[in-house]
Length: 206
Image (cartoon, rainbow, N blue to C red; front, side):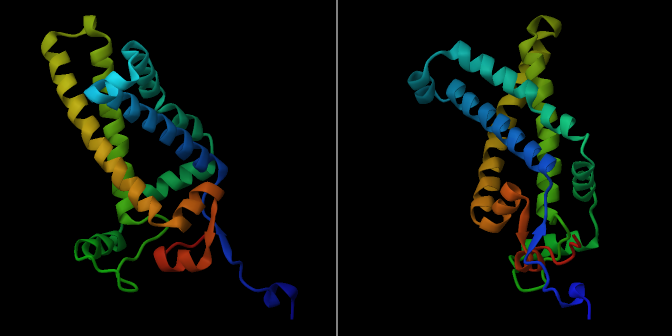
């Protein structure tokens, strides 16, 4: 019998490549910078504590403009493009996952998922759309001389309330990540345990 046949199965599975992890980290850093500087601009207690409002505005603006850059640069990676393809596909098993999530059913097999589950796909689509809206409304607020007053007022309204929504959704995303150490390890190191993959993503075939 060959050595390959006798070898035990690998206990760690490759989940994310270097490009995917780099894009996630840099985008997360830029998003958290935007959220932190926005809080310093809009929460009176933080604004008084930090001061230097003009500096906070400039950091907020440039971090917001830079948000799409990591993803655009990462598109040169075939592995990242493959991950985006997985995120962009919604199948029958994803609808089963959502129905089970609504029922809070966590029994074995109730939430089938491939490389990404339905919740992760919805979050990725929503945060991508929200980022584009924030970028567009932010530009309208920045270049005030290019648009009518009613446009700027509407952009400010949308920007402020969507920013609050993003902060709440990000807090939920971080909370779920903190509750799953193996998922965090997968994004940090690129590999996950076979047991975790078979339990959380049984349809994934790495």
